[in-house]
Image 1 (cartoon, rainbow, N blue to C red):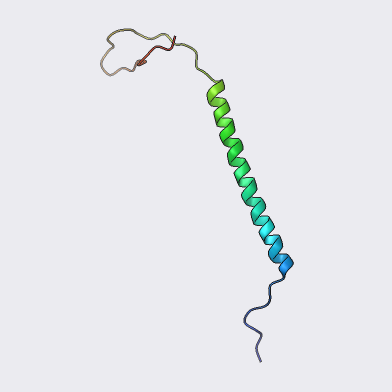
Image 2 (image 1 turned 45 degrees about the horizontal axis):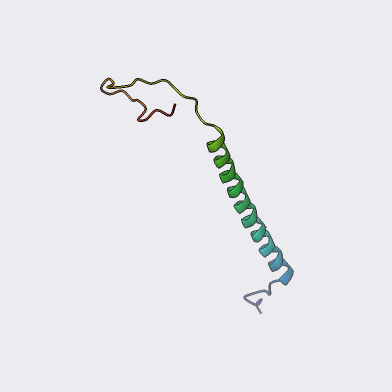
Length: 70
């Protein structure tokens, strides 16, 4: 006649798939945490040096520092 429409799923295969998905999610979260930690480290460790800028009125259309950090 015909085969049954659904074959039973092997429980060990289902368990292995769940473990693999969990591992992928954990690795993804760890990668995101490490990347964000690296961005914070770079943001706090690389401070630009003081650059001299023009005080007073500037030329129209030019950019200047809003407030001196030095």
